[in-house]
Length: 593
Image (cartoon, rainbow, N blue to C red):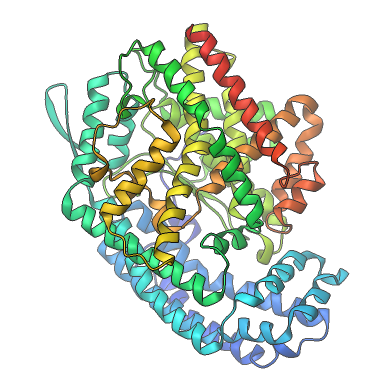
């Protein structure tokens, strides 16, 4: 196997910004929109046969795919170098073109609205349109949120300014550099690298890494700027909530997730009720580390003084062995990703921090990583390749129902992590297993409990601004600290005052995708249920699991999961997962004693 650790975008897209094919793709966007409008304007509202619907979707899907190719390529270039002015400029030009194109296509939603709920639902139940059923049902259910054509035009124009505001936070964050003294020498590192030091065995290095982060994000100018950016984004969101007639500030996200408000509220309530489990874990960890006080910079600390490292080759080996033990199709697709230039593995200045997987109908998946040889990076590799494989398995769906809602999009990624955990666990001594369990519980609390803490903060901010309050970064800092304490109780000592608590400004999702974070919590809880089933049924469960992934967005989460024996409307679904977490905490407490 020959690993390729850089994206080969030339192979799949264009040779560069000056490739004439890229400009031709961009130049074709408006003509594509105009051709579609010429064929379908004043026609959609007159649809009477399923054949017309099939032709419409075939044309719409082809137009959308062709229009999006240049945008996908540029977004990949920008993630590799967020400071590349030529790419930023081209992205800005493209955004203006898309806004113009979408303005020319506003008639689509208006005409579906004129066609009406009853007729659309009749089409949804027509056997000839079974592949598009969920797309049509969603369209029918969302009609009530569509405004008049003039209002939609104004909102579409407003999105131009919002895009600049959202991009500003990302550009600023990716431009920051962080200073830290290591081994007597001052170093300048990326945010990804400074964050990785929060898991260092050396407590002083951990403290310095937190201090370095705070020096940047607590800077008054940064706080004012990011506070105003966030307030603007929330004002725009809550304005849309009012205009479109949603009943709560979270309903737009719940609607796009195809989850009932009651289901999401139940998720939040059940997790928040379990917050005391986190304090138990922290207290056990404090005892194990023999600390008198447990500070924020101790939260992600390893238990031992020696931190196990995994270079990228070792991480790949562990992942591939895990996939080979589980399923040949998962194993093959991971190999394909690793050998074909679709994984970009290592940190670089200007590169987007974190990790992501990207995929769309009819095209292969891509994964971006920032591997720094931590155990967590091994999990990240498996996590993102889970996403990539999910995108691969969903390719059998029509483009209109290809994308899973976010509530299901984390399924394969987290399931991969569970499989990897079991693989690693079998190879550990008792002391190593205690360290492993610490890592595992840290991840569980980060991806379930902390995500719900984020949502609670977001909901408070959005509801306050929805009610007409003016908020600044001072308010955000105070609210963030209050929600932190709600989760941690008195188990953690915070080293900055509430007035200077800038943690919210380091969370990109609350800027770019409000209320996105509960998808992580839901996904983890779902995976506990799936993994329990896998442990009981073994190989016979794998096809059922893959069917869930193959479904893409073709079914509502509640219906899809019910077909496989999971009832997400029942508190038991959430409590069973929390019971599994409590068992892990009890086991950890026992090892510490």
